[in-house]
Image (tube, rainbow, N blue to C red; front, side, top):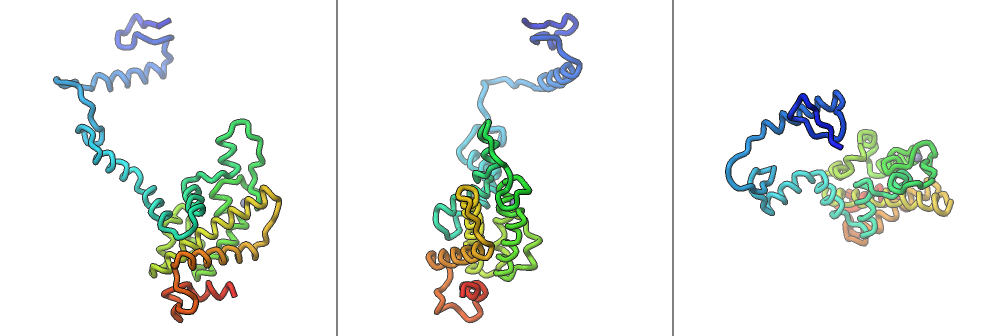
Length: 249
Ligand SMILES: [Zn+2]
């Protein structure tokens, strides 16, 4: 049944009597509708951004503008020299799609799961907590930054800007090595987490750090990022940093 207000003509079709705040909103809506001027001629579909008929070029430009940050992520991720499964993992991490307990609980109704971080048991397991803010992982990151001679930069870094961390180095080869090391770190943290959650196996910090360094070195060698150990320069600037390799001795 429709309710008709006998005193007004502009808002006379509602399924019930309007409340005071609703009348206010309807008045605003009426003002907007009345401000629209119809122009003569045929109706046409126009692209709201340009006010002209849509073209593929408009669509692409619009997509690129909207996705500026996303594009930065994509170009960063696809430039990393690591196995494809690690690239996909990194992409999921960057887009908040990692199947953490918190995300699963949000997506699956009636899922009964302990949301606590498996490492510290003191915060919910979100992707940012698990791989950056968790006290255990912070200690690991501090070691990793120290390993690359970036100790002073560590506390200024924000995980949201991980796409720009390679700019800490001016040397392009070091940038590539560092991106691989970042991937090895995140990937190793995630595998460590999975072992703990699914197999109840705990990896010692020292072993985890060794695995990260080993993965990073092997991936860099496999993808020919750095020169081989025999031919690298003495100062390490043109290849894998001395401190990195020495730490594996
Ligand atoms: Zn934690």
